[in-house]
Structures are given as C-alpha cells and as structure tokens.
Image 1 (cartoon, one colour):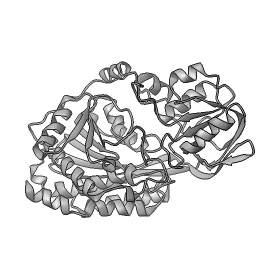
Image 2 (image 1 turned 180 degrees about the vertical axis):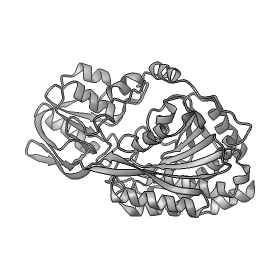
Image 3 (image 1 turned 30 degrees about the vertical axis):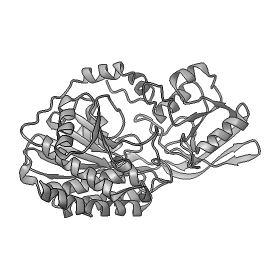
Length: 434
C-alpha cells in the first residue's frame, strides 16, 4: 500500500490542474471560461490514462453580469447582483427579516418592500435554510427586492444564484452584500426607501459535462464527480476547483490501481452546478440510475483537513468511509442526514446511494466560498494530497466485490425529506420532484 500512497503524496497532477482552473478566471456557467475549464479537464483525464474522455454538451439559460447598484438615503452601498436575478430597478422601504427563516417571513410584513436577510441560520436552528429558499419566501410574501447579506466579516459581498428549473430567471431583483453593508443597512435605513438596480443579459448558452472512465466494462458503475464551473466574481478555488482537481488526482491514482477495480469507475465533472445543479440533473436524467452503485461527489474538500461524508442514510456508504478511515488511520466524520444541495442530489433524490464529500471547517456558513476571496492562497497542497489519498482508497473499496449498496425508493426519500423538515423549503424553491 505504501507505494501508491507515496506516489499520491508527491504527485502534483491534481494540484497543477487546480492552478489551471483558477488561472482561467471567470468559469461562470455557459461562459467561454467554463468551456475552457471543461476542455482542460477532459484533456487532464485523458493524460492520466482514463479512457474515452469527452464532453457531453447541453443548452442552458445563460446569465451575464452588468452593472448593479444599491442606493440608501444619500449613499451608494457596495453590492453585486445574484446570478439569474432579473434586470430590473425597484425602490421601496427596506425591512430586516433577520436570518430569513420561514417563521420570520410569516411574522414580518414584507409585501411591497425590499428585504434584507443574513446568509446564515441561528446555531440553534435544526436545519439549514438555503439562499434560494429565503429568496422564494420573499417572493411568496410579496417582496419586490432581495438583499442577501454575508454572515462573515471582511467586507466581502456574497453571491449565489436564484431562479428555478422551470423559471431560470428569478422574479425580483436580488443583490449580495457584505456583512458590514448588511449591518449598516439594517442600522441606518430600515423603514426607509432604498433602490436596487440590476442590469444583466440573459442569452441562451451552452454548458457541458466531462466524462471518462477506468476499470472493467461492467454495467454497474461508480460515479466520481465534482463541478468545474464557479461564480464569476472569484477564482472558485475551494468551490469547486478543489473538487474537479481531486477527480483528476483520483483518476491518476486509480489508473495505477486499475486491476483492483471490480466495478467500472466513471469520472464526471459537471458544468452549471452553481446555477441550479443543471449539469448533474442532465446526467441523472440521461443515465440508468439503477446501474449506479454509488456516487462520490467531491465539493469543497480542501477547506479543512478532516473529510466529512454526508451519507444520506445509506449504511453501506457510512461503513465504507469508516473502514477506509480506520485502515489509513485518518480521522473523518460522517453524517446520515440528507443534504439536498450539490451534484450528488439529482441522483440521491431518487434513491441512488451517494456521498456529499466536503471537509469540516470552523463556524457556520460557506467561509470564503461564493465571495471574491475564494482564492488559491487559502488552500494547502498537503491537505489536498491527504484528502486524495483517502478518497482513492474509498473508491477502490466501493469498487470491490465485497461492498454491496442498496438503493432506496423515491417514496422513502420523500418521506425522509419530510421527516427532516426539508420538504417545505424544496417545494418553495421548485425543487420538489415527487
């Protein structure tokens, strides 16, 4: 075992690909930069020995940033438009809706007003409340504008898309602001008129998914996935340059261990994750989900040194992760609850066993992700290599004949979403598929 671990711990292949991705610049869904990232990823997979590397293109609703502004009193506050916000100008009284929880919208009169909400949820709250859920609560309750405030200090405006699969462009103009601007707005301007201006273009565009494979040509397969796109305001180093680069590093390591694979391993690097899981939804609709033994989706793994495996209630996945961690003497954490975000979800929602693989970090929220500070200097090559070693061994474990996974029914998944209080939010955002 030590030889391949040594090779992985001294390999620069994955990290070099990470540098390639961040140096592209804008990798927004449907942009020339995203296309370059997909092509570079295809070529990298081919170069490490994965076969049949290719891009599967698909059409998407494009969104191109223009100028945006937020006016309050006699001041102009720094802001950025949220992707897929409509191009629109509104002026209305500002109202603070706290964390943007469902009950806060029920208790606050937001009709005809511009709302400001925090990107976080309280520490005592039993579940996460996604940005899009907060946005559509605002729409549902009659707000005319949406201000999304970062919960983390540092003068960093936060981004993230709005829109639904059925209506990709949102209903009301939306901007992201820093924590400092959000606090200032609430302190000085609540109850007073503010104006939001969003300009953008919404052309039709093309995205794509990168595919390649290793191992025997079995009908059953394991999907190793990450997303290659990123928000246009940043390098997208953590989110999710690290995930795509990890896929490349795993392909390199697994090419040398191909004789240990009893199940085909297919690598898929998705486009258009940041605008609603469009690439993974495209793949989930195309693939035979019954033939997918497991999905190993890698998203933001290098933001901390301890890998976190969200296992979505699939016992075999939890056992496999803990077995590998024990074998390598590496600490990991597992979480059996559902995480209905990132590229595993279009598969897991139908009962396909799947991981969301990330990393433990300090505090709540996204950290640097979705801000201009998501840059390569925040990351350590040592951590990248350690995570890749654990995940390589995990894929070999899953691809073995001794590991069996069991699919769940759509009815079971829907019932669990209800039990975990996630169903209401998914209905509000148009993501309830059952």
